Length: 270
Image (cartoon, rainbow, N blue to C red; front, side):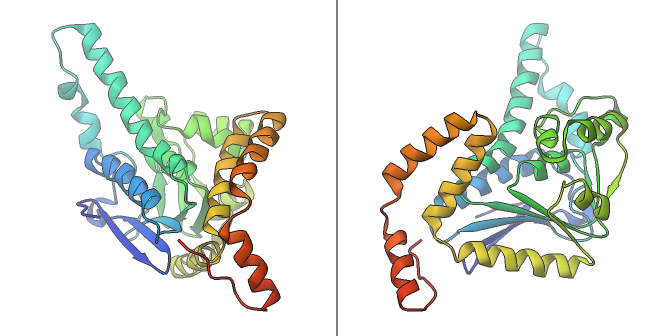
């Protein structure tokens, strides 16, 4: 990918997508929002990329939405008609939301590796990922409440499903900081590592494990888990039956069987 705000690399089936404004604490500008969506579309469409990792360059994961973006909204939505101006604002918010929903739309699992501050829009970002991991120096805060606004890019919709409604309300109403240890305790992250280096090593190991599995099966798992989250158990069971009626008898299934009989690691096509 040709990016100005992200650093994207691909090796051994693992795509690493790093927020790349370390001199600005990786604050998220409008181009970065759009490039995150483009990166997810690229990850989805690139057969050799089996799993993605979102991280941040430097000491910060992200300071959240760049203040210049917020300051420029008035000019961006300016119109002689008040109604049309408000419509432009709604479309802008929906577009930013879609940049993060693109993480869920991507068929490949996306892991977040979080060091240092993860503020405001950063929580929106990681909440859309499949799994989250952090270093002990990380902290999370739903900062929007402290700047007089309601978080509108996914935190209030996704966070309750991760940490429970009561805790999500506490974080949204107070804007307090959650450190790495507490983030693991409340299940915001799967695991908290002692150092950023240990975080990167640990997340790479998990990503390598996923990249070694059947790509078709991994994509099916993500599809089913996302669907089950938003539907009844009966709906989910019906969908997975239909999915497997189409996908079960695959080359990956045959290769798994052969590899087991031959006592070797399976080699799956991208």
